[in-house]
Amino acid sequence: MTETGWIICTDLDASLLDGNYVWDGAQAALNLIAESDIPLILNSSKTLAEMHFYSEALGLSTPLIAENGTVIAFPEAMEWIPDSVDFEGGYGVLRSSMNRTKILEIAHGLRESKGYDFIGFNDSTAGDLSKRLGLKIESAKAALKRYGTEPIVWKDTDSALIAFKEALKKAGITLVRGGYFYHLMPVVASKGAAMQLVCKLYQKVHPEYAWKTLAIGDSPNDISMLESADEAIVIPNPDNGTMQLKRVDYTIADAPGPTGWGNAVTKLLNAFLCPI
Image (cartoon, rainbow, N blue to C red):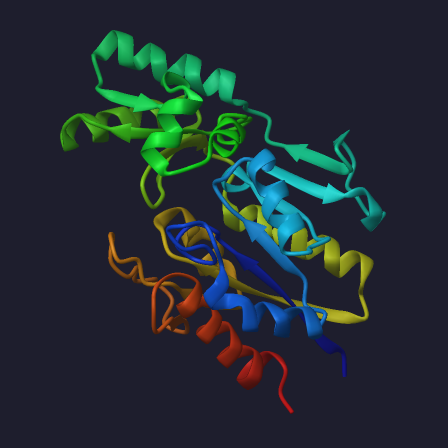
C-alpha cells in the first residue's frame, strides 16, 4: 500500500501571521510540521520579494506561491523545476501570462472612461503603504514589487463594482476579495490552481507517496485552494467573519490568526495526518 504524503499550503496574513506579522501562536505546530518532514508551502497575496523574508525566517526550502498564484517560485536546490521559468535569487520563477502592466492598463482605462472610484498600490508610495498597513518601509517597498496582481481599495458603489467586475471579466481579469483589498488578477490564475501544480510536481518526483493537500486560509481569495484541497482549515477573521465553504468536510479553527492556526494544524496532524 502506497504511503500518503501530505503538503500543507497556507495563507499568511490573518492566518499564519497575526496583525503584527508574527506567528508566535503557531510555533509548536510549525515545529511538529518540521519534525514530520511535511512540506509547508506559503501561498499568499504577498509579493515574492515579501515572501522571501518569511520563507527564510521560517527555515523553509519549499516552493513559494505569491500574488494569489500568479507567481510560483521553486528553489533551485530542488532540481525539479518546470520548464519556462526565469532564474533569479536562487529560484526558478514561473509567472502567469498576463502581467500587472496589462492589468493596470485595462483597469485604469476603465477608471478614466467610466469614473470608477478606487485606489490601488500603483497609486501609492511605499510611505503611504507603510502608514496604512503598519509595515516597515522596506516591507512596504517589497509589497510594491508586483508582477501579476494589483490590490485596490474600492471606494465606489456596489452597483459600480458589479459593472467594473463585468468589464474586467471580458478582458480576462478577475476581481478577488482578500482580507482588506480587492485583488485584480488574471482569470486563469488562483491560489488553488498553483497549489495543485505544486502537488503534481511533488507526485511526479516522489511517486513513492500518494500526495494529498491540507489548505489553510481566512479570506475569499483562499477559497480556490480550500475547496480543492483534500483537507481544509478555515481561520476565523475578526474583521470579516468566518467563511463558509461549499464543501462540508472542513475544519473551523477555534481562534483567529496563528493561535487558531496552530491549534487546528496540531489536531489534524495528530488525528489524521500522522496517525499512530
